[in-house]
Image (tube, rainbow, N blue to C red; front, side, top):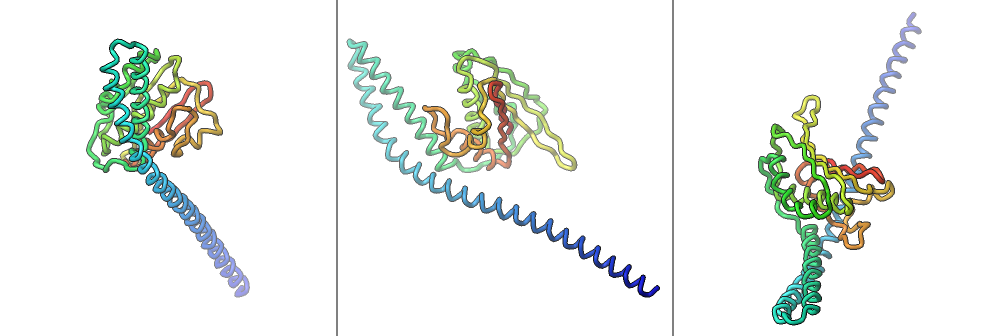
Amino acid sequence: GELAQAFAGMTDNLKRSHEAMARLNRDLETKIKMLGETQAQLIQSEKLASIGEMSAAVAHGLRNPLASLRAAAQVALRHAKEAPVAQEHLKTVIAEVDRLDRRITHLLSFSRPAPFRPLPEQLPRLVDGLLPTFARQLKDRAIRLETDLPNDLPEVHVDPIQLEQALGEVISNALDAMPQGGRLMIRGYRKRQDGTAGQVVIEIADTGDGIPENVLPSVCNPFFTTRAEGTGLGLAIAKRYVAQNGGTLDIASTPGAGTTVRI
């Protein structure tokens, strides 16, 4: 009987040791995962810092000469009233300078993000204030706009300037994906979670050509672009601003059917 009791005690001790070992292994796996994520974040931060310094230097070096070039073209345009061909060329020069200036603005936005100033904000009001910016593009490209933004969505604590820019970058990408027309759907809803207040989600969906599966993981990387005229910074800026406001930006896409961005 004593021997049986001793074996039973040893079995219990061994079982507890195995359970403790399993807990330690789970804790170790969690810590290794956290360490890997932290290391990846540090590497990404160092890369972004280097890119930011380079971008600021390049942008500063280009902006002043471009401003002088634009001013000179405007002066020449005022004196070329009798030469329609020259006027067209000068207007092209001004348009290209403006396009380059927008790219430089992208670079500066990426290298020197705006200060973070969060405020209570209603997302439907924010989106409604942003949409008139894209009215001309929607009309010119025959894109049908549909919105579903309930007024009873809870307020979110965000920086309205940063979030507006992030939404603008996503909407601009969606429009570029539909040069021959299509449908742009913007909807908002509340995603409830057990024991928490939940999340407010904005979905921006287009009916463009979609993003190939092998390209999708890279679309938010700085300077990655599949368009010859793109800077590859739009989605990188959007993702940075969304993260700074405590949110996430996820992209799902089906080639040939369209893309949906969830913020």
